[in-house]
Length: 246
Ligand SMILES: [Fe+2]
Image 1: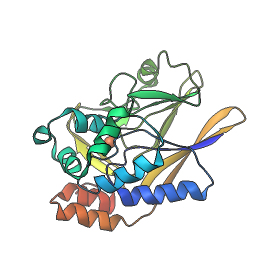
Image 2 (image 1 turned 60 degrees about the horizontal axis):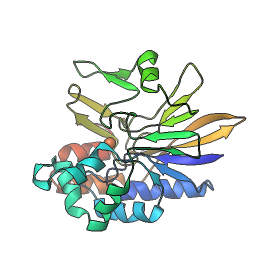
Image 3 (image 1 turned 120 degrees about the horizontal axis):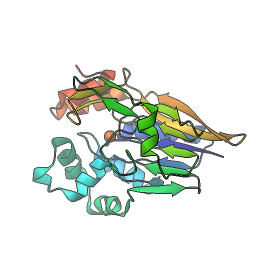
Image 4 (image 1 turned 45 degrees about the vertical axis):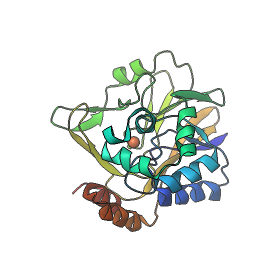
């Protein structure tokens, strides 16, 4: 049993295209998507056309929710930029997405945590902005009641696997389209992949155990960096060009 997991595409259709090609080149036909599909100053409309046609099992990210809950004039600029590129049927598709779901009877999917789409499951942020792996007790507490061997989450854009002490595995595949960003919740912090590649993961069940393979794929990231720069989004341009915020 093998499938691919993508997350945090953030409206980067060039990154999405190479990831989907990389998945297909491995003979993998099953894909799940952990949300934050469109928000950002890039190509939300083209990304939406690809994702709607892909018809993968998808859960809603916090930014997907903002796109259908908030008035465009009240949105953060990354959400309003995407909203301006999206058509009615793209937004209707966002309305259909569940907060969480169960895939193949044994994989739990959510964007961030089972109760909140804007909290990191695996990472904690110190008051001065340092981001680090949460203590196992806190990670396990968030998994209470999820009696499934594999749990998938996105949101932090940090590829990571954490095995709980009872054997359950939590995997974050990293971000397809946004390798670095800053945020002010719960404290001001930066997440930086340190490279510009598109990230995703393959999950395979081997002798009854789920194992992740993390993949990074090169694409024309400079084209997307140039697009962000033309939109006046220098931090996005830096992230896409280098994987760092400078
Ligand atoms: Fe995200």
